[in-house]
Length: 559
Image 1 (cartoon, rainbow, N blue to C red):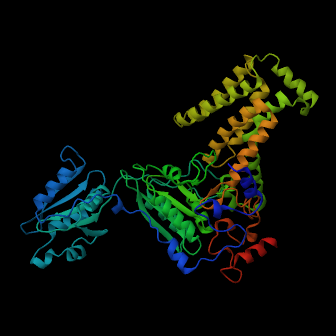
Image 2 (image 1 turned 180 degrees about the horizontal axis):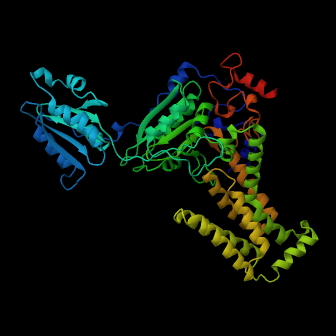
Image 3 (image 1 turned 45 degrees about the vertical axis):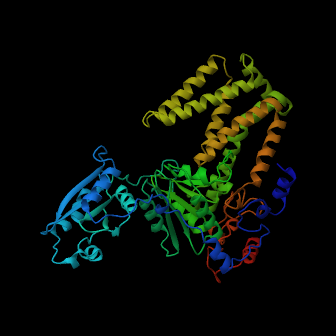
């Protein structure tokens, strides 16, 4: 690790264009315009489609018996009880047919109304009536209808909740979408509770989540690119952005990283987060996750790109800056003095949760001269009967609280809060009375725990909890010197990292601070979008000319 380059990176401009394959631009404040040739080049990548996962099994035969036999063999029928083979007679003709679908994947009423009844009532007067296009237009009029001759594609359609109609002497199958599995209703977010704001949270259904985004961003520029990931799960995935605002290089980079995923099972957006992030060994999260559609729409409007995965109630936002993990959507809805005060409280809570136990251990063990004499005597009096060292005392209480916190999460929701509160009170009081820990250590641990809950992002809470123990180890051996050295190493390393071509500490460094970072300015003064992500359209408030240059952006910030 080259410390000289890291410090130069932190203090002076930006060297990302030389250190990484991907960068949104030179960090000298002058973004290079994207030429039409460059624009076409960055858009060459595309989202992975289902054809990339489907094996080629050939095409349908004109023999209905042969086709049915192939599907039964392919689905291990009847051992596999999921496949339903419904044989039918088409209308008043002597033409045989079969409808294939998966049990539990279809809406029976929709299937009966859209497929079975039209099929049995269809009248065939001549051979022209057997035309696939004519049947799709005149017979199966309800729902989305398509046709396909590839056995692999027909199999995928059946697995995703469609009904496949096979007829005698026809080499194409009619596919009718009749999905009807149980879906979770829209509920309030569980991990991102706000006082003022929307009470809607994402569900596990991708199309429902996309509809909540479209309802908040009613513009034709809102682009939703859908694809598939996971060779076994074949999970639907979508990237969402506004084409007139989002940087083309950023969108192309998101597509490229998703296209390189070769994992077999994708069950949640958390798996995608781990597969596309740059620094998998970092303590701190590199991608912002949220279950709030209003928070997601707000970022998309600013030029960020959202990644949404089917079966997951969490959307991903890229790139992720460090200040974003200490913000909530509620900050936007409150007046600037209120939201700035709340953000300041979160920053203080973050610092306390990260450093308070380690600073106490360092001062009490190595730097007693920093504590007033009266306070020092009080601390010594409480620790006089405690037989274990101070560092071990803090470690024991912190570990105990982590166990209680995890147990409170896993215990059924009705009992969880009660177990957490009662368990902490009883164990803490019993430990003090048994002279195992001192009362001031209980106060330090409780304050640290409360401060950690001011951090709104769950992943950032995890990072703080882990680094708290690392800081404790450094303080136990080297005191404040250890904490300072460790912090310099971690924060210097953090300042050199980037998330999708953007420094993770932006907009704090290496560029100027944004008007909506740690301290939030009045909303009528937030004229520009975040400079760090290089949006095409930098102005949020159209007071005159649109498509202002970055030079105009700098002049506006200077004012």
